[in-house]
Amino acid sequence: MWLVIAGAAPALAAPAAEKKPAAEKKAPAAEKKAPDKAPAREELSPDEVRKADKLLDELHDAVVKNQDACPKMAAALGTVLTRHQDWLKQTAESGKDVPQATKGKLRKRQGEVIAGIRKCKDDKGVQGAKDRFLALVTPPARRAEGGAEAAPAPAAKK
Image (cartoon, rainbow, N blue to C red; front, side, top):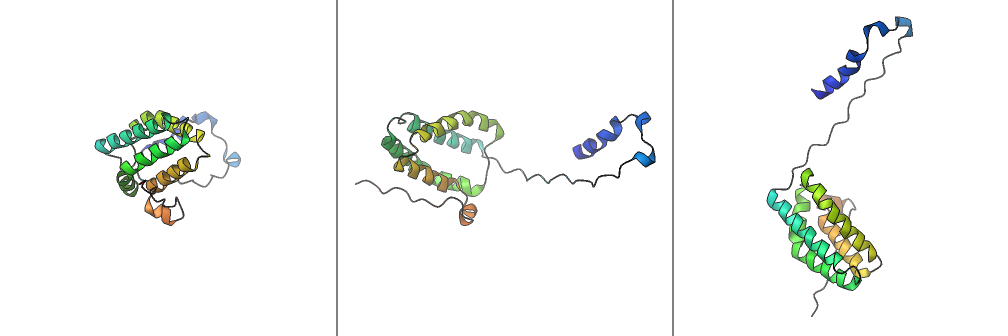
C-alpha cells in the first residue's frame, strides 16, 4: 500500500496548470521495480537476549580489565568463549537477529570491547581468541563458502 501512495504522490502534487504540451513531454522512464526487501529475520527471544547481554558483559570485563596485559586478556577471552561456545554456535545456526531495541544498548559496550582488543592486536593469543569467536558466530553455510574458519578451542593447561 505504501508503494502505491509513494508512486502516486508526484502526480497528485503537480498542479494542473503546469502541464506541458504533448510535444514537450519526455518519454516515460522505464518503471523501476523497488528492490525486494529481505524477509525480516526471526529475533532472539527475551531469554536469548539476556544470554547475549551476559556474554557481552563477560567479554567487556575480560577485555577492559586486561587491556594493559594482553596475555591475561587472551586467557580471559578464551575462558569466556569456552563458557559460551555452545550457545554461540546454536545462535549462529539459528540465524536469529538481535532485536533493534537491544542493538543500541549493546553497541556501546561492543565498541569498548573492540577498542580494547585493538590495543592487543599484535598478541597471538588475543588474535586466536578473536578468530575463535568469529568462527563460533559464523553460520556453518557461510563457513562452507569460505567465511571464518573453524578455530579449535585452546589446549587445556595441565
